[in-house]
Image (cartoon, rainbow, N blue to C red):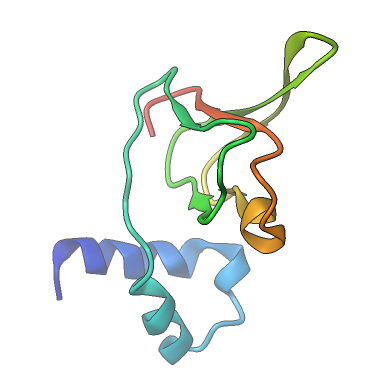
Length: 105
């Protein structure tokens, strides 16, 4: 097993959303997971873009940013073990908010 697979396996065990998964389920989902890194200040994704995937935050924090009233608003900050992007994955609608790395991720 590769080092990335080992780390993904350990990561999945720490994420609350997968607590009810069996080892077989976990093994299956890991095949569809990839590790990405982002520098502080970079966008993970932007509001209005296609959303065929979601992210789990391993370390660092992100800002959830929404455009309204002709202004940019930080509506939430999320950290390790939290997910972002799941709504667009579920409903197939473009991203409803942008996600920016507050720290290196």
